[in-house]
Image (tube, rainbow, N blue to C red; front, side, top):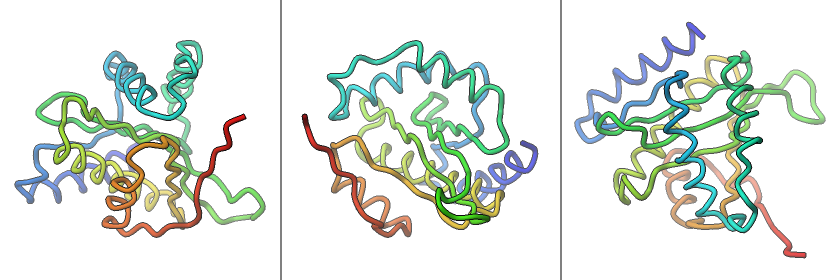
Length: 178
């Protein structure tokens, strides 16, 4: 955790030099953040194509317990804008499923409070969270960062933001309604 915090502090300092981005601060989550994280994750869920599936408080509680134990291969970053929670990123590092020794980061969730932030600030929060994921991944010597876009909404906008940040399209996610 010390290396993670140091890496993120360094990234924060760099970002502070840009007046446009200094309003967004990305940091490791703390226990006190969970009261604000839950409504943000609920809001995110409500904007996805899976919103018809009821949000599970029990599953969220389990994820909170898991992340709070601070496993070394998992991380939760939060982004603050003007002192309030504006976004989060939850991700973990592991080996490729049919490979050995190649560490990669899998992003489970990036959520931004689009209701409070508006379009411009939401884009800054999103890109700063992605930068935080990359910095954490570098500290783990991960070779790749996988970001699964599974909301089913704002696909073109998300693609544009990710490509601007250096991502390339690997494939695609598809869904079949049954």
